[in-house]
Length: 167
Image (cartoon, rainbow, N blue to C red; front, side, top):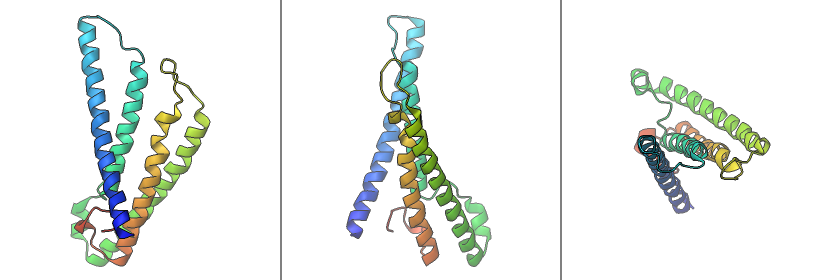
């Protein structure tokens, strides 16, 4: 079972990194093309705004998930290092509970957002659920990682030792 969880964690990490790089590369190419086309308007990019919006939302959510997975999104190590071990553990538990609450709120409202969007893009004629699906999808994984980090802190396991799902 642990081997399966570790493999799933590696897949999530790889998909986050590859997806974020692909989104960033796509945004870079679109921006470069837009600049070139302003200088010499040979053709126009149809659905430019729709594609940029899709790439941007997935970039933000995937990079947030990657940082969340590693436990590095909301950390100020300077303050942690100044605290005694007992106080640090209490603060880490509080932070992880707050992160879990945020992930669950994001998940609940993200699902509602996707469900109620009911919008189709003007040019590509695609359901905006593909755009907004990044929110509940990544939030669900954020909640899973929050629970794992919370359990690790409560057990007293060192968080710095590993950024994997099961340690």
